[in-house]
Image (cartoon, rainbow, N blue to C red; front, side, top):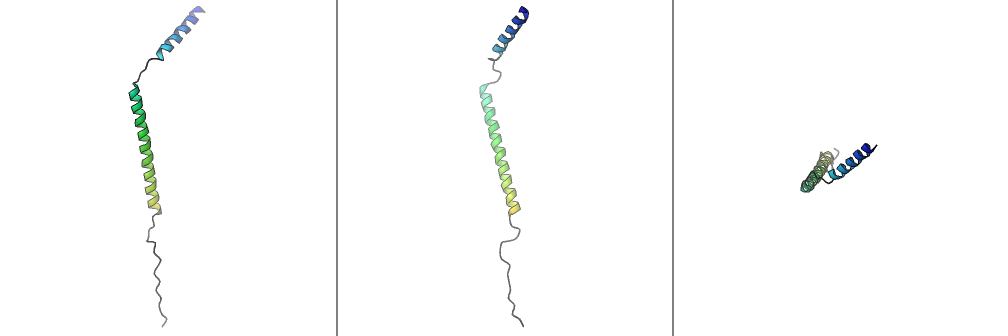
Length: 76
C-alpha cells in the first residue's frame, strides 16, 4: 500500500513540474494566432466579393430597360 501511495505522490510531483515547462515560444503563438485571424478575414472577404459578383451577374438585366417602341399607323 505504501508503494502505491509513494508512486502516486511521485507522479503528482512530476506532473506538477511538467506543467511549468513551456514547449513553444510565446511570440510564435501570437504570430500564428494573428496569421490565422488574417486568413480567416481574407477568406470571408473573398466569399463576400464572390457573392456580390454572382448576384450582380444573375440579376443584371439581359436587355436594356427601355419601353418598347410603338408605331401608330394611320388606317388607309
